[in-house]
Length: 141
Image 1 (tube, rainbow, N blue to C red):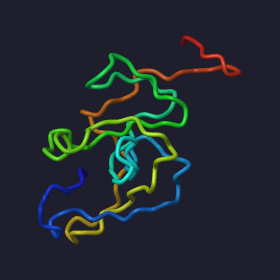
Image 2 (cartoon, rainbow, N blue to C red):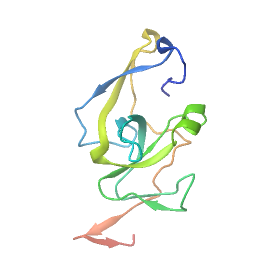
Image 3 (spheres, rainbow, N blue to C red):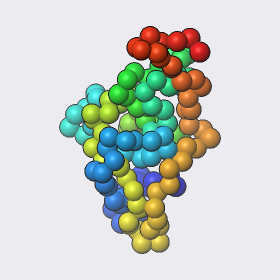
């Protein structure tokens, strides 16, 4: 589900359970909190939609982008959300060392209690290709 966090009232926002287990084995579709590279005082929460070695076609920016080794492409679940579009970049490349925790469950409000699924939505940027290498030499296929 998309996390609900745009209300001014704390009791209407989703509160999630964060786990520090699995920081070294992230998967596409999982939601992580991380330190944004351009603002180390804050913490953001987004879904991983591509991993190192993937070649993607971002919605904004360059035509193609190869995700560097040790990095992840993070995107908002709801790019149409005012907060995601105006207050925070909706997608960004993040080093694995900046991941701080994985969101595993929605624990508030009680009517939304659930395990957060590992999934990628159809509006998300998905890898169009995977870089292959042989003894450190990148292959063209």
